[in-house]
Length: 372
Image (cartoon, helix red, strand yellow):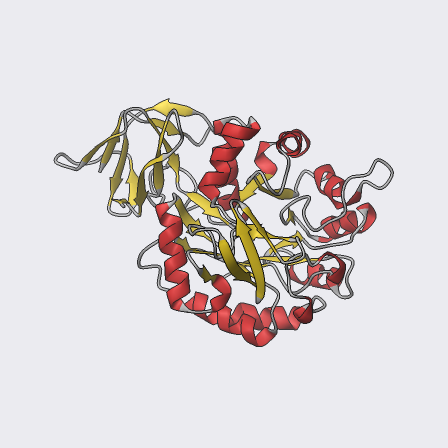
């Protein structure tokens, strides 16, 4: 395949008008005569996006622990230009988490978005900041438990979220440092505790600002502890519900574009109508982009990563070049798959999206070198 006429997102983080070639499942330097030609005039060509934190869509949840649910999710995400995924677990007991891990390991990635990892959002969190997580299953950080789950998943767990103030958290961080991405999440940690966790091996912040202490000029909290460290990255949900646009813009000033990762945090209602749904075994009310428990607690989002990227550009004032980096490049780098995904580079898997230059709406999705 040869894609002509599009403005192509480069590894330098800029757009350049050039031809892009694919052969089989990968990008190539050149393509032989007689190959299919795709006219990209009036479009941007960006790398396929990577969502490292979402729970479900189209009425299915990753925690269903079934091949059917994983495939429905993978098909929907691919249709939305999200070509690599690392779905997130919820807070459940080890038996349920093991079933989820085994289902992910068994998934063959024959079609739809490529499942390249798992994000373990629960159960190693704080009861006080559990948000929409089920408090019944909260568990202190447990190395042996996690390693059993990692074995069941065939090594697919790429991120583990935890509250560093909880008993056993620091020991967990030291034991798993370098094996998985360690992330502060659902936490009551103060600045000092978060700083100590980052120094011990944490490099990631789960849905920054949500389910953690806010910034205070005398008690800066975990957000500033993360911003202070050049090696700590932060997830942002740019759905216009979780975070005010001004905070998104200022997060870029604090962290810089290389340390911001866009996520969707979507739940099973994504792609469907408003109504009653479920997350982590709890009922959720969905109206527009807002998903809440019955007590009003925000329960994930009702969007997708491409829509979040578009919202960041169109409604929050984030330049497209930076937004693409945060939705395609940075998440792939974060979970260690940038050698295969995340840029339009010869030798990498040919995942890309054509976007209308005016609206940023999807004009075509290329997955493993094939137009969907």
